[in-house]
Image 1 (cartoon, rainbow, N blue to C red):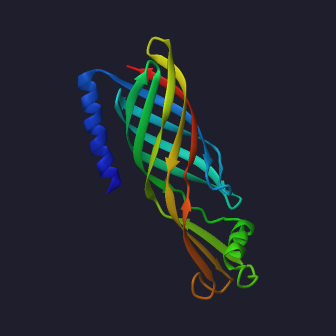
Image 2: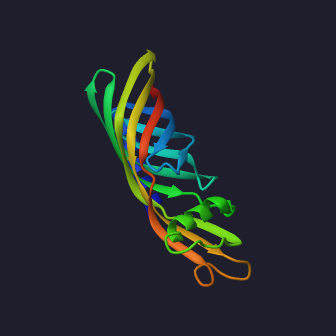
Length: 205
C-alpha cells in the first residue's frame, strides 16, 4: 500500500515543481548516533527532491546490532521552514523498512537471551538463532545550514533527531527443533531513534 501512495505523491509533487519551475535535489551523507548504546550507526545517505518548502525523500542507513550489519531504508515526505538566510528547520514523516538476514552471530543474541532470562536461570545456548524486525512509521526533525557556492550549488550541514521504534522477535532453537516450540522466543519493541548528523550537497534548478 505504501508504494502506490508515494508514487502518487511523487507525481503530484514533481508536477507542482515543474509548474513552479522552482525545485531542488539534495544528497546527504548521514550518520546516526543511536539512543540504544547496543546499536552502532554506519555512514548512510539520504536523497531529497522537491520544492523549497515540501519534498520527498529516500534514505539508507546501515547499522550494527548483535555484532552484525543490517540496513534500514526509508521513504517519506517532509517540509522545510525558513528561519533566516541559510538556516532552515525541517520535519519529515516516513515508512522505514529494516533488512533481514539469516547469518546472525549467535554470541550477540545469546547475550540478549541471558539479559532476558538470567534473573530466573542461566540459559543454555542454542544451535541456531534468528532475529526479525518489522517495518514501521517514524518521524525526523532538525535544522539545516547551507551556503551557496556557485550558481545553483550549495553546501551545508544538518543536525536532527529520528523517532523510530521497530518490533523485534528473537528466536533460538537446536538442530532438529523449531523456533517457539522446542526453543526460545522473545518479542519486544526496540528503539531505533537517535541523533542525525549530515552533510548537504544541494542543487537548485
